[in-house]
Figure 1 (tube, rainbow, N blue to C red):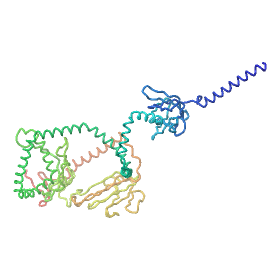
Figure 2: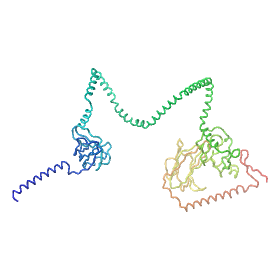
Figure 3: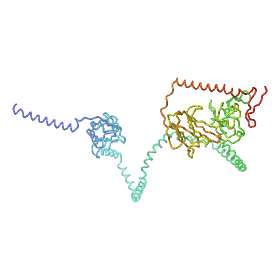
Length: 559
């Protein structure tokens, strides 16, 4: 190629390269080659100086730009933003939007405002935000001021200003004093502005309540109007009522005034009666409540009372003179304890024990007793001293010789307390026994005893005998009424895992063994005891009851 042809080509390439560089620089400047995420902002208006490519900032750091502005038919403006993807994770999803400007005449920008409580979610592509405010431009102010001034008539404005000048002429001192007083009043009001603002905010709830109650308030006012009208319509009857009330008051004054001393005396006399009724109000209420079902029941087919009679187990015999009746019950009524006045179905109210003499449960409801003193005297004749075993309370526990035990608690006021560990059974049993007076007992009656294989503690220790099977503590009473039992516990010092329950075969074998022993004992009582006791007695012979005047002397009974 000749030199003349190369020169134009080089010039054309140079011009193309320069144009490409300029185009590339402009694209880089406009961000045409930068990826962005679309976000839309809805605003009542965009402002006169909001243009595309306006900056989008968060905490004064640019995070994107305005790609385009769209005006909707409803007057709103939709600002389409292009947010940088690298900044998207820094913007919370509930971010607030302000359309503001740096100066009065400056161009607008989109300001993202972090909320007080940012959302854990971040802004995402396609999200729609609402602008909370748009800064007013100076030209908008001028436009609105021009529209206002165009409505004012100059002649009337001149007359108004002239009237104000005439009114203020010569009163400058008073106006100044008024402004000074206003300043002082505002200065005194300023410390309370916060409370005033709080009251204004709180008044919204009160006004809301009044608004909700407005129909009722209006109805009340309407009813008050009707009441007033009724009083007006019935004023004649109202006057007659008032005159009658005055006459009644005069008569009542004469009656009460003439009998005031008698009424005062009657009220004083009623004080003890009312006090007594108040004291027993619960009992009286309970009694009347119990009478209500009886009053509602249908009458009996025949006159009289219905009595339920049955045979029950024997209880403790009557003892003279301890069971003589007396009036010494205390504690008040027990209506609630007895489930009264409405006793539930299939419920037996508990027996209330009071100090009234005889107490059928003084020694417990024992029912049938096979080992009682009367049977022994019947079989063996008179027995000296108190009945055997009638003054003892037994506590027992199963133990073994492979563990150590601690007995502790507080002694009662019984005459004597005995502790024992037994090895073996029946008369061949070996025992380690001790009594309370031989132990070290604290002043408050508390104690502890050790039955163990090795010595434990400094005092109250006893060696556990080989083959130990049971522990027993019996408390001997001298007076069942005035003496109380102790609080005694036993614990294993080295417990192991609980033993597994026995098998069905072992349980049946143990049951058969106990059943055979019970059968042998019962056979002995039926065959041996009557034969030994009654076998030597002659026919037609009986032992009389034991009394103070009659010992067990035989008496003949004629055939």
